[in-house]
Image 1: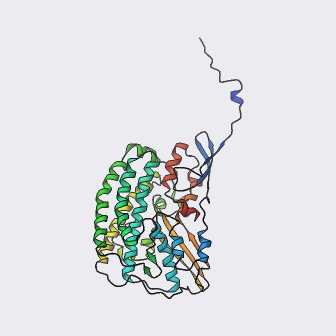
Image 2 (image 1 turned 30 degrees about the vertical axis):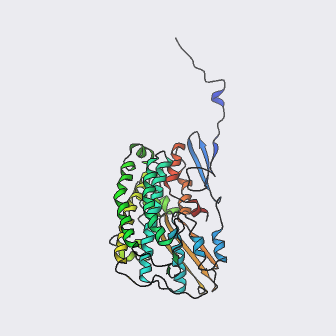
Image 3 (image 1 turned 90 degrees about the vertical axis):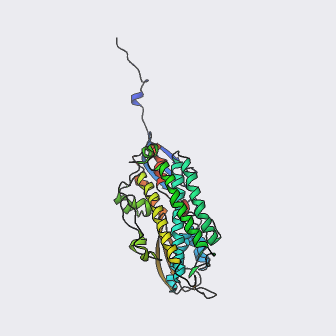
Length: 381
């Protein structure tokens, strides 16, 4: 007996077409407002176009009508998870233009707070990334550790998110009495409890299935797009400005600073880079606290009533938590910058999605997107 199953009259002759799918501009899996224009064939991505600009505030034009003290406030905000590092880069550029020598104690305080800010940034992604692919618990542990360090940062600066602690020529003020002891205890507490996050997520079978071998960013592609930070180092690009072009006090911390790299270039490698870098930053923070106990003196320099940078230009770059941030400052001798261009890490990293996403499946899209560790304000500025 033969049974013929029909598929519908003319089904084999129907024309098929790729579908254009918009992810965003409002989407829960992004740290901000990003739109992805995808062309998909079924569940497979054929092409991807990141469309940016939905949060654009024109910070680079606003720099031109603010004096050198005020622009720190604008720079503070584009990557809201790395506020201290953002304002630091602008301060370094202005100090280089003006030839200001920052007091030694201020340099060590800046280095310490930059590393604590790096840990705060990474903890946010260590909690939010598993959340984006269905794991709720790590978020609670990550925020517990964030609050421990936030208390220390808030006590020193007065701010929880936008610290505004850097000043041209140093930092705002001396830290409170006993602060270094409390900071050391906070660092020790976070280091001791990080094992809780590791137990939950590093070897979790479901997490591994969603991330290992998914979203592989080849090193040549990462380099071509100018990717940096954890995203680039997960693909094997061994570059870190703290080691390769030291600023602040990093040249004196070479024996403590370890540049963590991986070669897999997948979502899991990017996540592991963040996890391992937390320990490196905590070690650097301890080393800074050791040095602060022996270094005294002022924490800033006295500036004139009107701050004017001499005519010329300079470029300062820093190893921010998400990658390399560059600050190109052009002055015409006035009290405001003639031009201040930001080169942000997230902008370059997000562009790689155009090459990274084609060929992947829609269920893996969120896992890949979240593993790029970007802040959309850092893209749009």
